[in-house]
Length: 469
Ligand SMILES: *Cc1c(COP(=O)(O)O)cnc(C)c1O
Image (cartoon, rainbow, N blue to C red; front, side, top):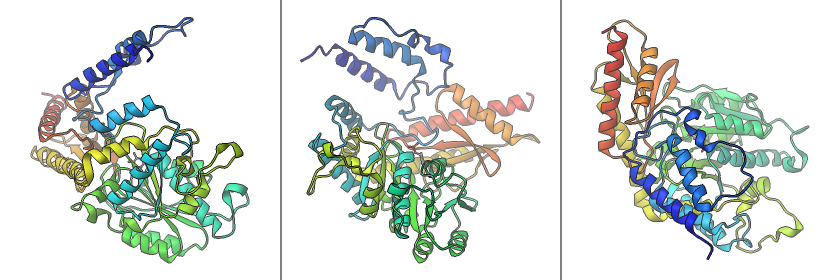
């Protein structure tokens, strides 16, 4: 056994952090000057491991954000379930290279099991292939690479071997509300961020099925359609059944970016929201958002293992590829050597069970509705979206004539400074809005009440200030 002083210190510091997580100010971002004790020249000589850990914690402390805590509502950010966090520590301690079965049978089998559980809980085809990637971005990338392979293979073009230069053109149809990582993935895949047909969305941000149908009808040849489960502003879902009908009719590959929204499929009560989503050809999911496992963790699911594998796998004599049933995790992801990130997904699903995942998702959605209902009681506060999931858009109106955009931004800034909770901002259909996402496993009704009170107080203060008294 080597000296475990550093591990002991890390455990103590981690416990201290976690024990204060629900109480610490969620807080504004600090300027980089607050973190100067982390800086300095590269040391010539080494330092004792435990001392390194102590110094790291001391230096990082002022810049740590309680985003894993119960009152962080910015972006779409979950915390870490205790079992998932503990499994993450073990993943590091084991330090398995989860690229190939031969390097870590345990990691390969754990990920295989976690993959089958993910498919089961979401009601996705059991024969789908699954890759555990770093996040929703890479899940989109991986799924769309599989799509690119398949639609070009159907016209006799091997895109991995021959590239895109000289290839038959691929038409990509996406909603105007598609997440930025879809465009970024398309850019990386050589399909172009802007070389897409953008289909208009309705007032809740749902891609309209009619224009999808029209776009598909106006073009023959390789086509990919990207739909979305869970708009990052409103939480809305695209009409998958109609889009799937159109895609099927025209032989297009249908991909669904369901980074957080697809988890609604785990809940019998919410499943109608994703109706038709199982008919897609691929799906992108995050585990580090709503499943509440630590970063970094996304899941790419493809209904057709062959193009998925063709797009991702590599061969070399020394790699000692597995045969038979053994699964080489790197066949399904862009990485070669990789962290066994499916281990935390395994732990989260095992600790929650089917019922627990449904409870988590339903609870957060209920809390989002509770937040919206509470805020709505104050006159001048408007909820801009239908709260169908875990996302709430809030707008703040001045007493008399005045600028609701400016006031809304001022309220967001005041809430962020005050530190009870943290909410982000956005622009929705040209209107400034506060954006609230309830995605954590530990948020309670009490947290919502406290946060709503902080928000209404900030609103009252800002309204007084801007109305001059
Ligand atoms: C967060 C998100 C992504 C990107 O996921 P990362 O985990 O940040 O890479 C993609 N699509 C949607 C809808 C998201 O909410």
